[in-house]
Length: 287
Length: 347
Image (cartoon, chains in turn cyan, yellow):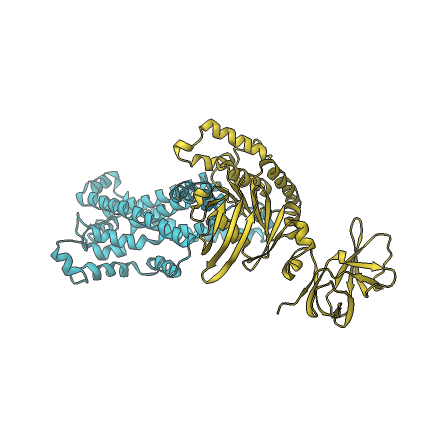
């Protein structure tokens, strides 16, 4: 995000016009085939039987509860990872401590582990046959096949997004500004609120958007821990699959379209931010 | 005006000793330079005075008050960071006002009072009218001035500057040096600045403290450290000298079997290090204590600088001659060498 945009750079490139054109065309064609076409298909399929059929889909109790569950999970997961992400990035960027590289590796773990495996980990821990299963059953606490399990699995999968966004930025910014604030009399908390937080706000927002998009869209890990109980533990992605398997294509594509729409809104918000605050985003790396 | 007394200060970083028993008295109102090569501990000492580094041992007093246990926020030491550390998301005015606005309500000046102070400080640092700009829109020299104004805004007891001119180009450095000297004279703050540039230190400071490997090698006025370096390290570090490994025998200094001149009194016989500056070598018409071959001649505005080889195995030394003195490259010239800065080899 720190590259200097140079408007004269393009004219310095010496590739002939046809090479440039074909490169652009290849890029566009590939993008259309792999991204735009499927996206368009989702929306056309959803609208195949008209808006009336859509109304029917969203009037369905199970669909409504799936949407609410997804929103609830995102509403819990994103703040959790927000707090953890800021704390972890702060610790990694501003302090030296033993086990630091181990912590960075662990933060990356959810990126490299298959989501299905992530879900299984929680079943193995909290499931009926799991490590804590008997104790949980004795105390009448339900984690697997219930909201806590879905939240845990989603939190695990989306854990890296905010921390990963912040760590390089905070490392680059260093600690001098915080130190300056403290020599001027600001307490540690005051320095964090008035200096650190404003300096990372755009990266933080970006991380939150990405984290939120993934939290709402996560399928694999959630599929393992949810149990697919209709109207109770079905999130939107799971609901899409159920509807599809029941040959309710309009329903499946309608919910899928809503999910895609949420993702598009997220992307739109991100682009808007970059466009509106592009200078501030680029400026954050300037000293 | 507050003096600073540093007593037995030591600082370890993960097993390495950065400061190794520093004793230093900084007089009220003086402008003191901490001079040393990189890794000598000068920045660590400055940060320790500010309270940014907890000490491993020792005490620091500000004007008789023990500041060792004081938090950085309570020391009231104005600190100017090497890369200025201006708050990039705040305007210049907000930067300067920061130290006042973070005060608890009871001690915080009224809004118009803060605004007035910001204006005054911008005038003081000769940047009137730029309060609404952001740090990213300023040049390096302007940022430096804003950083100083921000540090002065809280009326600090002492002013600490870390490599204040390190990141600036030569012309701006020169201007800012004069300007800092000026500000110091006007505000009268006890000021300590860190530098690795000996020229900057002797030009700007009332006194210079020379650090090496976490220890103070010498503290003194520019005249003292230049004319009477306390040891071989100081002699080599200030005054742009060429070092020759020599032997002293019967009051004479020899290098590589070449006789250079008379040794000052009190230097024991044996191996020694001789530090020669341009002023220590005079090119004479005849006689002289030794001779050498001119290998290069460079011109400056008022004189000519000669590079002279005393022998093939010794490093070249430099001498300055007036413009009317005719010397040709390759010529062997007679020299008189003053062996003032001669130190017995320690190991």
